[in-house]
Length: 292
Length: 258
Image 1: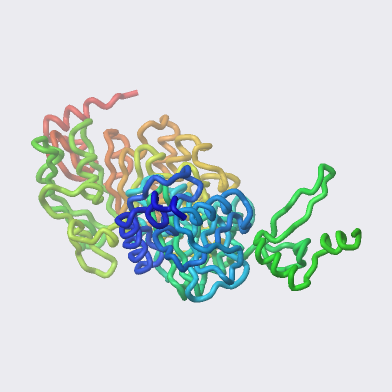
Image 2: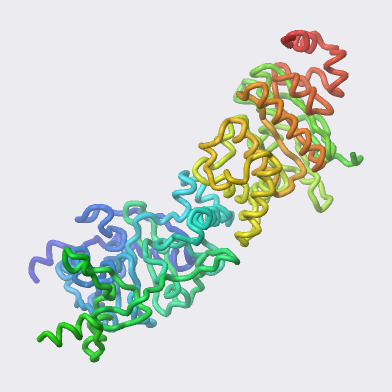
């Protein structure tokens, strides 16, 4: 690991890490509040997780075990390269097992397996401001947060119901944190919103381009916004996972051929593999075994 | 009309650097009273309206409002949160250009419902019922409830803006040239509507206009402004039928007779 000498541990210099840690501490102290920070250029383009990477780099220690997921999967481009990045610049242990990880950097999913105390989930956030598409002025949205004027958020949900007959927002579904700040949970499917509520793990959110950090400390109330007569509900899937047979998990659609063949599988690959190792099998797996 | 003023304006002046916006304006506005502020362009009408409605801070002078709890509060000393709350519950502001007062990218129903949601209404059915009710009252078809205001004509937009402001039952409405830019027949219907609503709801209103016909039709009392100062005020009929100041006489004689 001689080539490590050219980098400071985990890439960022110590001053930058201190600055980001201060922002993180403030974010934890005020759950859901967007703390501005001096986001750095990272060796990757904006939109690829520069915010998440800076947060991870600042909290990473030599004994940490890092897991990186991209849409729930450990083996897609974004996940593989960020994991390789930290292996190179911090020489930390990496894993794909949710259980073993101390820090999990995620792009738009929360692992199916319940997180526990001591674990930290780091989200990559493209647009931290939940009010952005309704009110384009940053000066105004900050004032609205400060004065707790959140009527506009319900205007968006109202529009959804008026157009579609139900709340059609399926991802980046706005939540209220600890009864105070309305927060964008990053573009995770709303399926994952209930997992944020009273989570045992610390949840940190980094938006590199927008230069904001926010946090949900462990055991914090996270409530999805809704109407009394149109309550919040998560997506339901009518089939179990085709590989592991899991129900009540978030599924991805995978196209199998050009004749309309498709299957639905767990988006959380680690969870799916775990279940298969324990002997669970979905109908696609059973068919494959039968063929062999 | 009750004997207690709703709004007490005392010696309000606004300077833009060394230029005068408006100076030394004092008056009381009573519940249910409609006051018109008339004058030519640049006479300080809109500056005065902005000072009264807390959109601008006056350079000197005091504006006091009679809150629902019976207390008078100095608007300049109120916290911002409280002021903004007042503006979206007890007050209304109708802009000359409806695009300034509406959210052009959300539906008419949501535009009307926004204030209800802002004060904590969380029942979709109730909000929608209130929105339909108000659209009906301002003569917009219920079938347009899910259309965006950009699909509306100028007159409809203005009526929608009025509905949006009145949904929380305000006691005081500010209007800045509410009929500006509308053709005469649409103007007439809008004036008719406003007059009906003001009467039915017992609203107090301050209307800025350069159109004396609008002032005649809507207001009980009027103030004539010139170069930032009020030069004449009194009952609308008195001012228009028997103008005393030379400038007011000029203004009244300039009305086009058809």
